[in-house]
Amino acid sequence: MMIRPVVAFPCQQTALVNRTICCSSSSNEASYIPKLEPFSRSKLDRMVKDPPLIQKSENDIADYCSTLEGDRSYSCWRAYFELKDLEKEAPKEEVERMIIESGGVKSLIGCLHGITEIRKAKKQSENENGSEASNLNSSENVTADGGKRRECPVPDGLPKSREEMEEEENGKMPDSPFTRLLRAKGKFPAWYSPAPDHETG
View 1 (cartoon, rainbow, N blue to C red):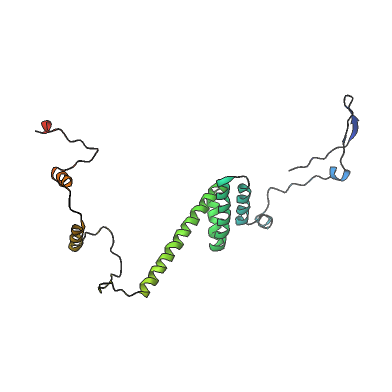
View 2: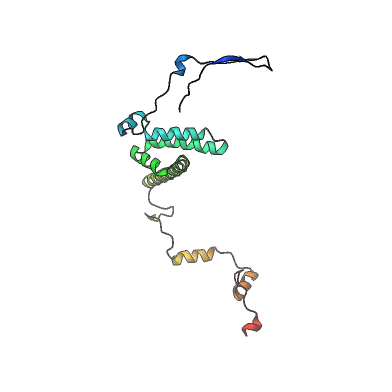
């Protein structure tokens, strides 16, 4: 940004209106012209004068947040504090790589929200696993009827045992006459209309 020197003009009086307009400037301000920095700065100069990448990103997010309103502003400020927390928890190189890969302030905000959600889910699963492990260690591996509890859970997708199938059959309610009729005739799905009897014969 360049500041132009202001030149002093003599006071003028307009003929139509009784008003005096004076433009003046002090002589020392008029002689000051700021010098621009050279474009070819060395890496060392940039490192010394520019703030670190993480600090610069925090400043950029704060500047962007101050232009927003409502929910978008709230989301933006949340990302700002998420970056502060991430800076404390994660290694500096990892945070800087994430900032560089994100590409801009808006995508960085989305990235920060995603990373925070992933970290929260990971912490919750670790807490649940830790509490389950402590519960298993504290309680005996014996069920109420005296049988031994299984060490690991049964994975889904295995066929049911005969005892489980018999238990399910005994637990079912008796069929109504309408249900028995439907079972006897068979029921087609709603999207399928069978051919009429006179066409199948």
